[in-house]
Image (spheres, protein in one colour):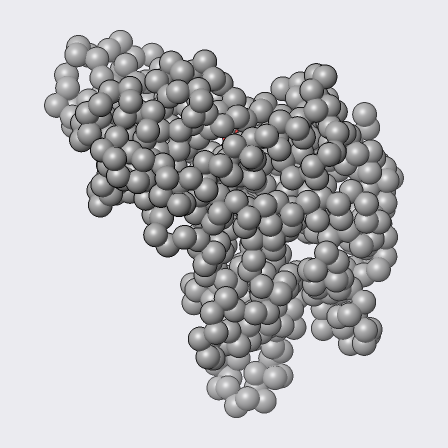
Length: 543
Ligand code: G6Q
């Protein structure tokens, strides 16, 4: 397949970029009184303002042409139909089946996966209801009140992010914790104040072969058995698993009856709306979980059927390509104006960077251009008092997404309006800046004028929703999932594998015996790694 960078549409964008790269948002707005409204959309209950981006109608026309030339429509349809678009792993990519309406048919290897999803959801709901009403009884006869999710990467970040995001909807009598790091202090800190008699571990691992997760699960088993005794019966009452690998779950000692399925057609970073979200479902309840799935589904339908000119994830993806590939921007800030979304950016980092951090095309050729951006940020307004300085006045171009909600979940007087005034003011300041003349007019001493001038022309997209509900969280996550899909498809890369995490994993496994052996090992790494291993051994009192 011809690489996108060799297509005439790409070349047209290069030429167009030469022409408009210096255009200032101040002028684009001055020349077009309706720009703010014309370049905004209200779709699927989401208001998205793209107008403070450095683009014109012609830019959008040229970017939209990339969708045609790369067959984006066919790509989306192939994903929804369960075609094996994850070519390196020869798998379908069907996170959309996790929220497909009951009765839909998506067949993989002769099986309607939507039926499997529905039966898994029913099993999850039974389990969640039982725990929530105090009906899941531990080894000593006490009901379970604490849920500790053990998992890492895609088996941790999603449920953890959503648990924080939807805390307002959670049952506060249930304590949910998330242990991911193989650093034993993570387990220690998350369990030190919990009573084992009331604690249940949800071991989430699609492969059930992940070193960190298995180490934490073994420690959890010792923690339970060391405190409660009881052997297999205690394990059965205090452990459930979520996995695609029943053999390994059984080998670990967890009853297969207490296993919730995963499938190889769901990627880890796309999986928190599967049983990987079990701990979340216990916390917020099955109804809220299903509401969240409804939000995902609404955006799935929007992505699948809305013309690209009004298709929010497609437009977000195209605008990201415009900055990354033509302006040379290397990062993308995501700035949610909601404390509950404080873990959103960490989650999106994995979603975007693991998916689109690729250097070859689906055919194995060098991709020949920049791919996924570095995604970063944290909840506003905190970032304003930290790194926004660099966005406003530094030398780097950092496109930023601002995410806000009109209604607060609790009305605490002035807070919401203060928060949203900041949500509105920052994109305005970033876009339009402050000229030297305006600074002087404020009476600023001449020696400060240059430092206090804001060049502006910093691009932003503002996303405004009514309220942080489970449904809206589902919509927001699906928007970013499909934005990532759009970009990956246009670049011609496979967004659904992650071989980059494999090499480090293998080398770590090779190094373990070299750290723990009684006698000095024969080392055959590079001289730097060899010296570090020797130094570590000596610091641990090993020869
Ligand atoms: C996500 C990745 C990765 C994965 C973890 C955990 O897309 O595949 O982050 O989720 O490595 O894997 P397991 O669930 O198999 O333990």
